Structure formats: C-alpha cells, structure tokens
View 1 (cartoon, helix red, strand yellow):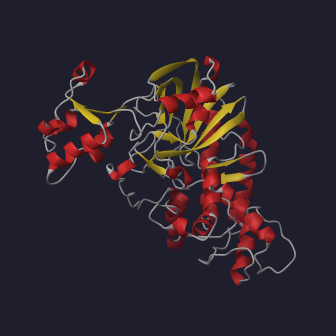
View 2 (cartoon, one colour):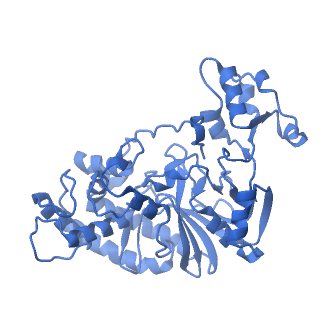
View 3 (cartoon, rainbow, N blue to C red):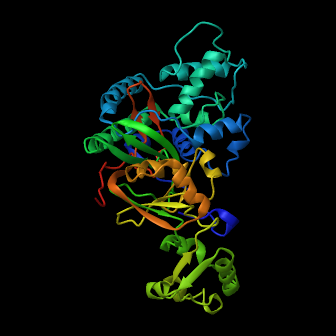
Length: 435
C-alpha cells in the first residue's frame, strides 16, 4: 500500500518488463509481443487514455461499482471454461484472427477497418453475422464492442479506442493458454470455497467479490500491488475490522517512499513527519509508552532511521481510510479503505505496495459484520465520527486472494484480464499461507 495524498509518497514508475510469458509467446511475432506489452499497461496513468473522446462519467460509474455477475471461483464455471477452451483451440487451429489496424472507430463511421472489426467481434461471439454495409459502424457493432470491452475489464463505452484495440489484438493462442492455466487454478480452489460466505480478491482484475451461497452479493473495484510490490496469492479468514486505526508504515513503504534520500535529509524528513502527522518511535516499547522521538534529532541518512517505528495518526491523510480488514497471513498484507477514491475510476489499478484497497468498503464492512448486528448506517457513522474501535467477527469469513486472468461463466461470457505479474506461463500452484 502506498499513499497518494499530498504527493509525499511518490509512486514508482512501473518497471519495463522484457520477459515474455510462456512457450506460446516465445514463438510469437514481435508484433504480437508488442500487443501483449500494450495490453499489460494499456491504461497506465501516464498514457493519456482518459483524454479519449468518450463519456468519462459513464466510464467512472461502471468501473467504480462493477456489476455483480457470477462468482469467479464457482465450480459452475468449470464446464463453461472447458467449452471455451475447445472453442478457442478451434480458432487457433484455423489460424486465429486478423489484427485490428490502429484506427479509432465509433458508431456512425464508415471505414474499411470496420469490416475487420466486424470479423474480429464475430470470432469471439460478440457479434453475430448480420446484413447491412460491412464497412459501417452501426448499432449492432457498437453493442458488440461494449460486450467485448466488458469481457476484458474495460468500461463498455462502445468506442474503439487504443485500449480496446490493444485488448482485441491479443493473439488467440495467448488467450487459449490463459484459459488452460486458469481452468486448473479455479479447479484447485473452487472445491474448497465456503458454502456460505466468503470474500475473493481477483488480483489481475483488481476486483473484490463478496459471495454468499454461490451468488455475488457485491462486487468492488480494488487497487492491488504494483509489479515490483506484488499482492500475494493466499487463503485465510477475515477475523477483525479496525475503525479509524493508526497506520504503521510498512517496511517497503518506509524504505522506498518515506525516508528521504539526497541532500537536506533532516529537513525533508522532519517536514514529512510533521505535515502528515507521523510519529517516530525507537521501538514498540516506546510506542506503547507514548514516547515519540524528536524528529529534529533523527539522522535520516543513517541505518538507525530505517529501524525506527513510524506511526501515522488516524485522519483524512491516513492511507488506511476509516476501516482496515484484518486476516492472518505471513505477508503482512490487509484490505482497507483509502482517502484517494479517484483511482477506482481507472481500468489499470496496480498501484499499491501489496495490500488491497477496496472501493465502497462500507458496504463490504457492513456485510462482514451483519452477524454481529451491524448495519450500513452504523458503519457510515464510524466514518463520520472518527471513533476508534476494533470489532471481531462472530464467525470468521474465508478469504481468497487469487490470480485469475481468464474465466468463463454460465451465461457464455468468456472474460480476460492482463497477466499482470506474468504468471500464466509458469507452473500453476495454489498457495495457502494461513488458515
């Protein structure tokens, strides 16, 4: 988790990835590799993609509170995935599909590129063959584009921008490999998912599902770990919620973001601590005794500064927001609110240091605490009052941090997400870090 407020924690620029995933990509053309790289980072915040001419407010609304849909880890998805694998294997055997040219298209346009777009949409079943001018972008093409965008985790605007082109130009062989890898992932976990309530975080999709009796109660956009600070795959149980808690700065954030580097270290460090309400303690004993260090006496250029305990008070600048969701794990990660809500409107949301930020977390918190008699108004009241409170769940809720880049659902939708951490070409394993 990293802080975006006030600019004091700079977000490290995503490392340029040169490794190409899996055997199927090793044999791909340079053009295909370029498409894969574009898909990985097609909505990087520096790409200017939000300047594309479409309804931004609509995109934000769709992306900030996704439709519930079907549970990703449901065993009901296994047969649809097997059918999808057969279908994509047939597409690959026939030579795949044509690449879309780098031409942005919208409803009402007439262009030879629309005919290529139509064939591309027909290949995955988003558009049925129909009459009319093949080179005209009509209502049916727009509707098919929206369906394709939704399947790829892109706001369904119906406008074929560079993001949509990059997603649709992923080779069929790569998508087939994704489906095969993820069939095993889902099969490994779906048999163990709880029959009642559970929470699932899909890391590549940056989404959270609250599931009860194999139905999605709510789906939330999330923010997950950067490529160089990855959110771990794990299984655990949610056991506690902290309201308006202090933030203990994690070692990664301390090392990469908080302790200043370069000249004038003492002044920079002192200003950071004072501006954001952060206290430094020699150790946990000093913290428990309420004995913070004088920031003027800290040598921020020394190793000792890295060994201190840094704690930020609750409040508007606190990166935990007003609620933190706890579960036992060896990675020291957790789920939490955030004061920076605008990030949920992006398609690309790999911006944390490993923890998971949750959009509309009051809804999820109320659902987790409903057995303890909590309601949504009570949760919202905690946000308004700033009251400090820890609440234990009466019954722990199973939690799955999973890595699913491709899945099919009973409504014949086949979904794909970018292989964020380049794992689809590796041996598939299931990790249970804590129970």
